[in-house]
Structures are given as C-alpha cells and as structure tokens.
Image (cartoon, rainbow over all chains, first blue to last red; front, top):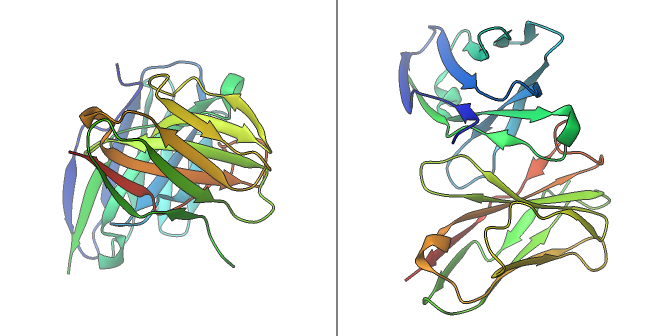
Length: 113
Length: 115
C-alpha cells in the first residue's frame, strides 16, 4: 500500500499561471515532507521541504502547504514557466527513520508557452 | 563540482545473468543510498550506508540483491540471477549528513532491462 500518494499522474498549465500539485499521505508518523523535481535522464533534485511544525514554506516561486489534519500537502508554483516542465515527486519521512525517504509516484507537469 | 555519477547508464541483461551497478558519490559524503524506480513509480528505498557500514538493508527485495561500500566511498549494487521484475532504474544518492531527509543528491541512475 502506498504511504505517499499523488493522484494526478499529469498536469498541464499555461505559462504564467499557477501550478498546483497535490499529495496525500497515510502514515501519521511522517513529520518531514519534501518535493523533488526530475527531468528526463537525470536524477531527482531537491526543490523545497516543510516540517510538520509549520503549515507553509515559501522559496521564490515555490510554496508548499501542509494540512496535517487532512494528511495533505500541496506545491504551488507561481508563475509557472516552461522550464518547470518536469516530474514532481512528493516525499515524506518520519523522525524515527530519517535515513528512509518514502516517495510518491510523481506528477508530470507540462507548462505550455 | 562533480556530482554523483553512476555506471553504466544503461544495462541490458539476459534473465539469469548477474549484474553490477556502480555509484561514485560526491567526494566526502558520509551517507550513500540506493533506490529502485520502476516505470511510472517514485524511487523506492533499497539500502543505506554510513561510511562503509550498511545500516539499513530493509528495502532489498530479495537475497539476490547485495550492496557494498568497502572503503566508504564507491558503492556497488549487485543483482544475481536477474529476473524480468528487476527491470527498473537504479538510483544512487549521497549525503554529507548522516540522514537522507535533509540533504541528498541523486545520480542520473542506471536503467536495467532484463530480457
């Protein structure tokens, strides 16, 4: 059973608009969440993270929101740019095992010029 | 500076063959992680080293999978008697810290196809 879910396999957004990528998790022990971005033929690269003591973290055009009661997080990209087209992975970890990061299946974002 | 490198980038193996996948982490990085990424899925944890010690191998799917990091730098993931279900991208990541969650850098992966 998947502990980290990304129910939208793909998303298409017009350049300049907001992209919203969603992620749900089932394990209540998770207390640290990350988003990774992956281009074809490359490894994932870290984008932004959030600890469970916060409900929002912002870094430039990227903002992650965490709703602990709903076990839901989202990544907002504003404004979206064509270079943002990639696969985005949501990931989570628990303090009891920070050596192990659990990834979701990914959402492929296409930003249309 | 140089990132994490992996070789070969692509490997085709006949079912039953043994394969060895190499990972060169970023110099000085203490921790090294192996992941398996099946088509359409996210990376799945296989094993974790801190220096030369293998601290967690709970994700290795069977005893046909074996990983080593004898000098605390380069690591090799070996798969014996490959099966079709082993076809995947194998990702290596390294971290300057003792844990993955705060900072890990991924290599480009080795795509293994078992025919």
